[in-house]
Image (cartoon, rainbow, N blue to C red; front, side, top):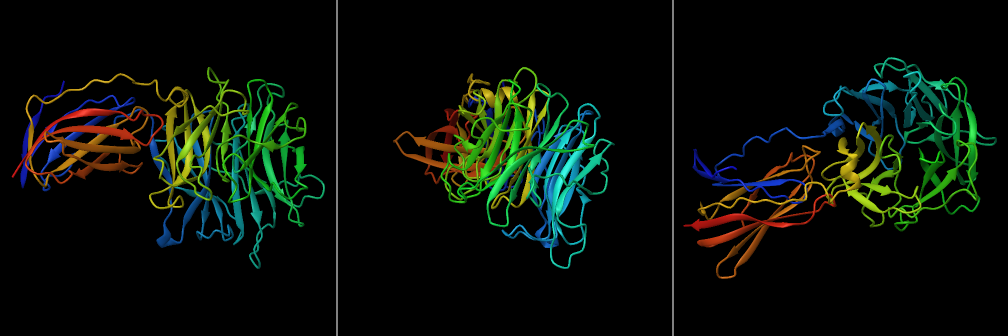
Length: 501
């Protein structure tokens, strides 16, 4: 048990007391100090990783968007993103596909390198998979031609890596598409390799738009490790009301395929912004009437599906912003279904509710999952972050570390009126927890004042907060954690504070 320790710094006296507060998932540590004192370094020891493989650089007219990620047979994480020359909402410009590699489960990454470029055309929508039998990475992207930009021309293109993602082949045109369809947009995110009804089959979801303005979705699959490709399921929305774009696919425990597309309507209500269907023949056709409304409580935005292998193969995970406010993208989350996508029973928050978040992809890392997603402090175009979390924690967010212990100071901590508090939060599974901590001081005369601080991925679990304006006297302190579904909002005592003039 940690005892109160006193250390003198230039400009004032630090009296630090440690409070071990369960907060359902971790600990909170507070230190009280005069304003001249500096915060101490934060420990980097934690399970899981949070990192930023792609960081936009507006000064260099470089923005990264549209993440995709796979894990190779050697355990390497290979991430992809569009490297854009603008941040316009038009999604049109000189775009390339960049990649970064991690050999330590996402804690650190190589510098991004461009692997797909087509003159000044737009190369977009990276969608990748790893062929478990050959070890090769297959990457699809789409080229959209801009006027006087040269290049290969409009189409769906395939690249292959045979060296664990260190290099990729040139863009190879893949002319497979349903009759009457000129081209399509893969994913973005990942394709899959089937292991049950058609073991070894590779399949990707594709979306397209006709010259009449109608939207449709189809699949392409290969039974020979990507040497030849075939048309699979196909459905065109002839009503003009659903506008399917940006598909994702997962193989359920039954061997059926869960296929879901975004409904491209920015003002769609939560719960109406996705459609889904099932394929019972390995993606060759859709069962029943095809796509119907999904019950996912999300707004219109791209998302990514995954069924983990191993002991958690009976759950379906889906990543997407969790805020249900129309036309807002924030609160990146993992949704959980134990009924093959018919119902979604719980949600695990990856970020503070107010934190921007948009496109994402998800990958399995043994007994954990890693999510690669767009986020930032002010806008989700600032960076692409990778965060890993144990699957058990996603499935049981309120059962991990539910015990609570606390050590109170035997004597009050004495500070002056203008003191600050350093608050540290540690959550198993991440070095950079998110949420809000409220520090409340209650005086003996009933006076109650609070200050709060928000933790985001960039805070690394440690921040300074100015104490509420207090007069001289003795106050009881409490800490309250909130803002994350994986941690119960719990108030715990944090010692006694004596303010002196």
